[in-house]
Image (cartoon, rainbow, N blue to C red; front, side, top):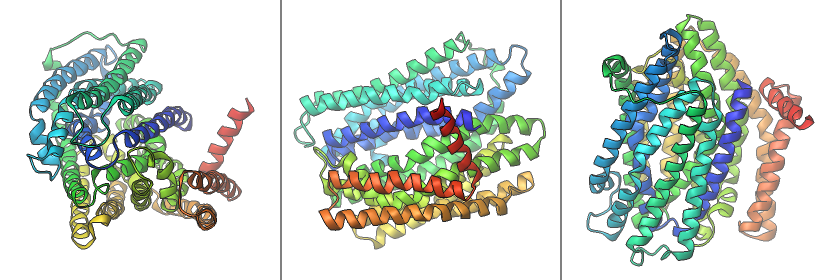
Length: 531
């Protein structure tokens, strides 16, 4: 699992690094005020729709069903995969067309802006250029899922790199020929450049995945014999997954409405800082957690199908420890170094250093949520490996309800400038409680998840990470005390000392404490360097 995860983590790391550059160029070109909020609102909608229709179903329903088809169908599941890709293509083309027509309704749903305002009009126009990517992104996601069931992990993790490169070029072009971040100055050509360029990145990503699928021996032949598509079985399992996604998306709609309202009251403190901080928060989970989960789920599904529950427990325990061995120090570093991370990335061009510092403040709060969120996502895969998509709906509903209550409460009591930070805090509280509930229910399903052993491992990891947090905090105090605030150069110095040397310190301390997962990572890196 470590080798497979490392392959995916390498691709994901490059993808996230180019994603950093992408968001950095975005902030440079259009800022995090009105135009930035309009773009980020329009950009979020297709991903929300895909979550509702496809992405959650891929991990919880499609992957296990494709694995079963490969194991039991006479043709190794090839016909089933072709039917699946045919249905997904036809359905997503239709959804993309309907979404473009319904763009004003969608923007109205996800924001609190007046329908006649300039910001609303710009967001609608951007959405109409961006929403066609639904079809391409969805087809690429299905192709990536089929590749994962064939243990081909490289292309799904590396394809987003091309997407990021395309969009980076688009934003750089806009920075040169566009009209800046003033909503009153932007033209239809400016918005078309931003929107169509964003969609072009997804087209390139989907193309890479389809080519990789063909090279893996998959020859696509459209199949419309829906009688053999097992849609009834998929719907029976997927209805609960869609229910879970609906619940979480309701929480996201509340988040975007509250943050858009805060952004109107305090420019630069709305949807954009929330989105950019959330993307940075997702980086460690995307590099480490997703890589481990992608390698873990097919194996857990096979173990469940063969009744080997002890292997499910062992797979889950090793996955949690492997993920947390890196998540724990990173979460502490995010809480300490948030502004030092965001100033070099976002403090340029149309975005001021003060705006970048605020994004870092939001990221600091998100650091609290990193470990609970990662464990929560791992726990859901235990249910999905059993084909149980109903239990995660109830867990997600409870988590989202707690999140919504705390979001509204903090929105009401906090000044507008701190609302987005409050939304991040509500997120951390909700996923902490959700992870506790999910652990209890998953443990009952498999006869225990070794909570005591995992808890002891996490405790040792936090103890090993404390010197790193102290070093990072000292770096912030010393550098800002000597040189003043967190400008670009000061932030780079803080990151080099607190982040770079801090992680080296953690690996050394954890290695001395004989934490097995860290020793495995250090050993693998040492062997690679030795070659």
